[in-house]
Image (cartoon, rainbow, N blue to C red; front, side, top):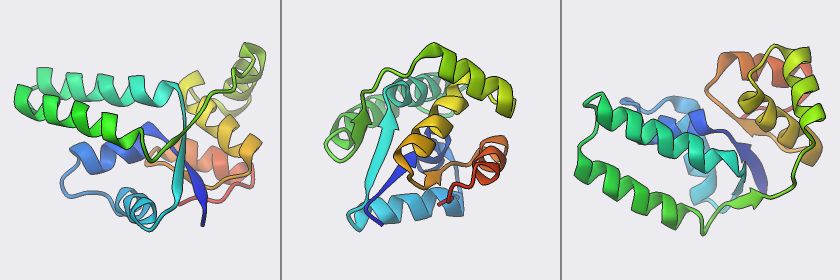
Length: 137
């Protein structure tokens, strides 16, 4: 596999979850083997926000947050950020049709448009991807 869409839940799976969920670990293994994770621009905001929230809830220390922020900077060297500005009408229609949030619909649209497998821990997004005929990681 050369590339796949990485959603925020899968990335956060190896950052915050203990034990690391199998699907998140598999996505990380694929990256280590040279596969390129493709992310929409909102991925960085979602992951960064989750890290800050984890600190506020006492799950991470300030030092851990600084280290993770630096890791995210490094991670940008191996990901492909899909910079296409998807029309809001497409995102809204996808969200309405699938009953997903617009955030999750963004990942579904990206995987569909690029015809790439999707790595996610979100059950509703997985179901929508399967209904759309997409391969899951």
